[in-house]
Image 1 (cartoon, rainbow, N blue to C red):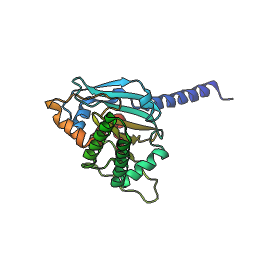
Image 2 (image 1 turned 90 degrees about the horizontal axis):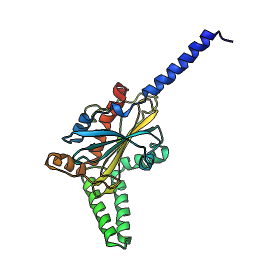
Image 3 (image 1 turned 180 degrees about the vertical axis):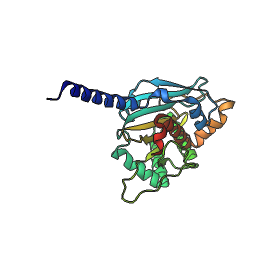
Image 4 (image 1 turned 30 degrees about the vertical axis):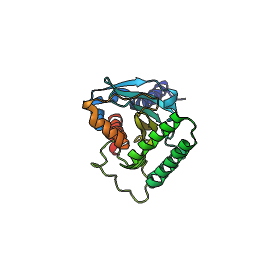
Length: 257
C-alpha cells in the first residue's frame, strides 16, 4: 500500500489534470463581437449571447454549448455558434457527400437544382410553387458567384489568402480539414454552415450563418447594405470569414498547429 502522502499526491495530480482539461474547453465568453462584425462586413455593433442547445442545434451534432450573434437593429442575419463533440457533425456519413460536392461543384449544384425543380413541378399549391421558384432563383444567384460546398484547409483561424495550407509531410497522417456548405434557403436567403475541427480534435466548431432556418428575417438599412449584398451573393464567403475569426478567438495560438 502506498504511503498516505503518495496517495494524496496522486489524487491531487489526477484532479489537477481533470481541472486542466475542463478549463481547456473554450467558452462563449471568449468571443468578441467587433472582429466578427468586421469579418462579416457588417457595421456593428453585434450582440453575443449564450443560447440553449435547442432541438435545432442538436441536429448539428452533440453540443456542449451554443451562442447566438445578432444586432440590436436586426440588420445582421442571426449567426449560431456551436461547440460540439468531434465527429458528431463531421462524421464519415457527412464528410463523404461534402467531399464529393467540393470536388465537383457543377454536379452538386445541378443535382440540387433538379431536386428543387422537380418539387416545384409536383407542387399543387401556388404558394409552394412560388416558394420553390424563389429558392431556385436564390440557388442560381449563389452558384453564379461560386460553389455550394468548399473544403477549408488548416490553419483555420486565419484568412485563406493570408495563410496557405502547410505542405504535407511524406508519411504523416493527413491534417483534418473543415468544410463550408449551403444548408438551404428561406425568405432571408441562403443558410450556410462552416464546420472546423479543433486543434486537439476533441471538438468541432460549427458556425451557421445567413438566412435563418427558423424563419427570422433581417431588417437591412443603408449602413448594412454592403453586408446584405455580400450575404446574398457570397454566403459561403461570409460564413467562412466569421468561422475563421471565431475559431481564432476560441482556440487562440493553437490554430497554427
